[in-house]
Length: 351
Image (tube, rainbow, N blue to C red):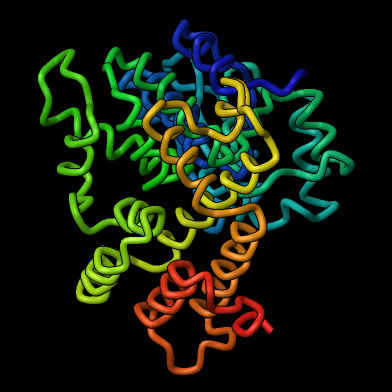
């Protein structure tokens, strides 16, 4: 069978078309949960679930138990549903004996059973017996993690499906602040929508207010201060971060800065970026494009490369590498100082 996406599987499930075996795998858990949760909620009516639906957890069960449940005939219902959550922790999944048992069932599944493996954060080795059997005999879905530049497009498509208008600046803000964590991103959207009227658009101000991003003291304002070389404002923001460390953790902030300067480095290689070039790096609204165009004038290609190296160094320091007794606030303060003072030789810090 071909590898299917959630967008291909969900319409079948919504029509009540269930297959004997689903193997849902990959680094992005959002789509795995989307498909498995729908089957759990909708494959059987509530009265039928008591005797005919079993939810198991990989670390608490084993392959013989899973297959024993899968081979049960339904009791006064159309089907039996067996869902194995956290299937990546299923003992014996990588062993020859375990793969042989699963291979035998996959080749001859009980037609009245819907067996679902929710195998998160990793994928099967397609060269091994189980990988080949799943590909040939089961509905296989591989859910890859979105790259940062793909998040705005995903968000816009999701909001279109939800029939909720969203401004470009709000898309950019959510994409940058939350990143490719789709479950968290959708959770924030749902929280925002609870406070809006039907059809009311989501704008940047609403995102800042609902998601808890300080209007004046956030990583995006720090980014602007670096761009404008506003030393006073940058230091005020750093002080705010130091006083509110739980709301301003260093590593996510470093990630946002790193992505900004990495995109800037890419733009340095494109003299006149086309709409396709902007889309490729995930910058889709005019306001953000103007900000990047301004940054191109402030930070040369070599300076941008140096800043990326400085951010990587700060990331290592945040993980305890050559950080000494520096706190997160100290690490960020040193990084911002180096970015704002190009006359300080980067080599003296990095070497």
